[in-house]
Image (tube, rainbow, N blue to C red; front, side, top):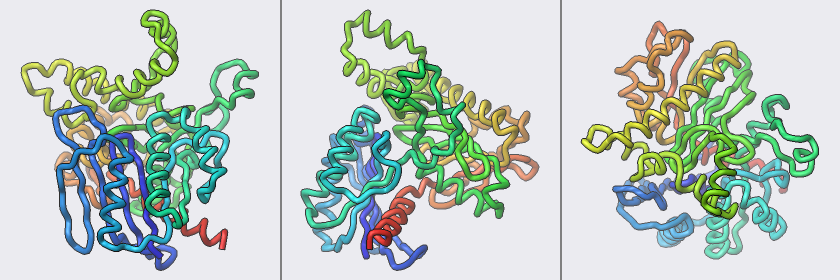
Length: 402
């Protein structure tokens, strides 16, 4: 059985076809990714694809995720690859979804109600679902949701300090996101360190080209995370502001006469790295610009990103009463050694020392140990591998419904 999995990042679209031949035996038949989808920057969007031992990279203009998914589906059909099932990652299911679901008309209607909860991710995921329904109308599709891993966060960490009536009426609480990635990071860290989950305290940093977050993980369970009711809060991200004083939103609406939709668009799509740097939402562009004569704004954006991330890591180390492992995952977390160096500077107070040579040699395809031999805290880079987890969710779902 061939399972096609789509994973929408805020500025990327990853897709893989797995040959589901057994519980753990799910080799990748085809792997592809569109980078810098809709990114405002100095470099163009491009695609990478690997199939039957051949890899290619191509500059291709894609304005949005629907266009990217259409090109992916066109390539799959052109190569006459049979598809038996299609799985999708959806960031926020709100109170409507607590588990993986087969896509039906009812599920589509509920997904539409969830669009405002994650205004960057949920709409693009639905666009890709609709494109797949148009191209493969008879193929079974399913959705898996990104907040399940954080369902273990205790009430004192997920409850907002708002009037109880408002919380109960609207279901306001911290949900947390990137849960599929954190589940994978926890599993791989315990496997690599030869420890059961119950013996590890982990701070995991999911650092993507669009969204980023941090999670405190104890005994294999999430006990806190930086994102909240929506993916807007927490770290400074590519175009998202992260944590700000709530009064700023009120002042901005009054001063500029913004409607709520305009404020939401500004905070989600024109803030963060793009808003501070003024020229790019990609931290890789910003890091390169820092050495230029006009790199002052780029340097400020980079320093803000590092400061916010270190602040969350430090607070979670205290909550966990120390940590055994610090994990970096997703594209920026795994692929940017200079950022990891800055994050791990002056961390000896908690027993963490980075090995610079190991850090620079970390491989993007597998788990790498980058801490020094005398570091009490193990520092790892772990690829997100979200698509494999989504595939396994689909296999389990189909078995339950068989």
